[in-house]
Image (cartoon, rainbow, N blue to C red):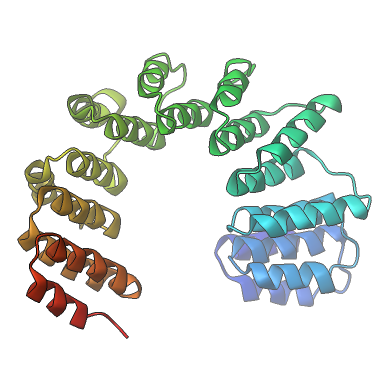
Length: 325
C-alpha cells in the first residue's frame, strides 16, 4: 500500500495518497513516514508539519529528517533548525540524511558557526561520507562566504560528481575568483551539464568576459551536446546588459527561441538605465508590469527615477500616477 501512496505522491495526487492511507486497517511506521513525505513532496508543508506534530504517533529519524528537510528546502530554515533541536531533545539518533537537511538550512541562513559544528560532528563521529553530504558541505561553505573551506572540502573529496564541480565553479565565481572558476571547469573530470555551463556563463558575466562568455555559449551544443535553455539565454542577456552591450542584448532577444522571462527583462531595464535609453526603458517597464503585476510599483519607481535623473519631471510625474494604490 505504501508503494501505491508513493505513486500518487509522485503524480502530485496528494488526496488520493491520503485516501489510501486512511483506508489502511493497520498503519506501520513506514506508512506514517510515507504519508508525511507525500505532504512535503506535494508542497503542502504546513499540512505536513501539522501531520508530523499532531498525528504521527512515533517519530523516528526518517520522520524528523523529512520534516527538517521539508523546511530547509522551502526557505524555512529557522524552523528546520528548531526541528533539529527538537529531534535532539527527543533523543532520536540522527543520520547522514539529517545532516544534509541541517546543512541546507545553515546555507540558507548563512550560519557558518552551526555549519562548522555539523561538519566537526560528522568527522568526530566517524560517519560515512557520501558524495551528497560532501556536496552539501561545499554548498554550505560557499553560501556562508567560506570559499577556502569549500575549496579544501572539494579538493579532499575521494569521489566527485558533476554537482561537486558545478557547486565549486559557481562558488569561486560568486566570490570574484573567476579565473580559478574557469580553470576548474577546464580541469573538470566529469561531463558538464546544463547547470555547469550556466555557472560558467555567470562567471564570465561577473567579470565582464564577454568574448569568453560568447565562446562558451556557442560551444554548448557543439562541444558538450547541451541544448541552450531559457536560463542560458537569460544569463547571456544579463551579461551583455551589465557591460553596456544593450544593442547586442536586443539582437539576441530577437533571435531567441523562447519568450523572455521577467529576469531577462529586468536585466534589459537595468541596461537601459546604464545607457540612458528611456524610450526602451518605458516599453520594458510596461512588459515587466504585465509579467509581474505584484511588483509593478518597484518597476515604475525605477522608471520614474530614471526620468527624474535627467530632469524630465513631467514624465516622472506621469509615471508616478500609474503606481498601484
